[in-house]
Length: 264
Image 1 (cartoon, one colour):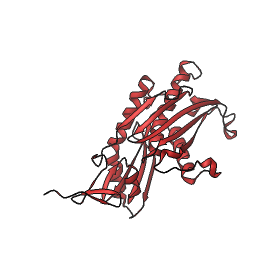
Image 2 (tube, rainbow, N blue to C red):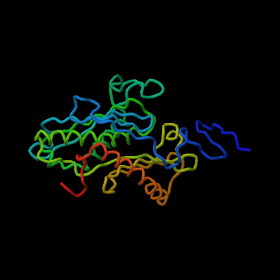
Image 3 (cartoon, one colour):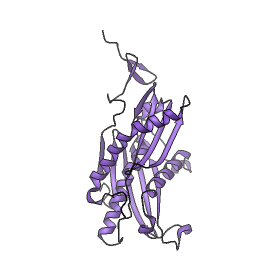
Image 4 (tube, rainbow, N blue to C red):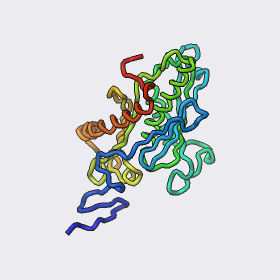
């Protein structure tokens, strides 16, 4: 007789094994959808959907750069990230009302900017600043990874538009970059964690990887138990097919504007 599923600490178990809320396999990603040109007034924009998580990513380009880059001939990419009050189950106050950004918000903003600068020729951009805005409208885990993945497409669309109107001589985007989460939950390795899984993870990780397979960022934290170097390598290896799936989704939306690694 099959065992009756039991809810333990917010997670469902059957026969002692974790059952994911959407019945996904352990290394299966949530449905991916990237809707281009979501905000018509922006140079580049997308609605990034990863399961229930949804982020609006826009790329806006201004002439001029921060003071530390003036006269260098190089451009800059920076990011702002925010969650709208009801992106979560209970309303979260806007940070502007609190009078300051949280450490988490500042960390994510810097992460997005670093990831995009890693695959962009700042010389080809010239002395221009790209503002990447990521607004989370529904948060169910993986908002930072969805923001990176969606922002790359918004950036690529913006560059393609400026190249078409001859503001840019060449597309500064040298490669794609996508990000994915993973974690050890109930003793099992899971990819693309939703909020409940992330909240109960003994170890969680976020990885950003380029289309050529180079790592831009690895964030790995032991929440409950320390992990070994073997664990770290095993999890990164397990994430590679999922990251390739996200990179393929980016290329599909960018079409002939998708960068070819090693060119440009």
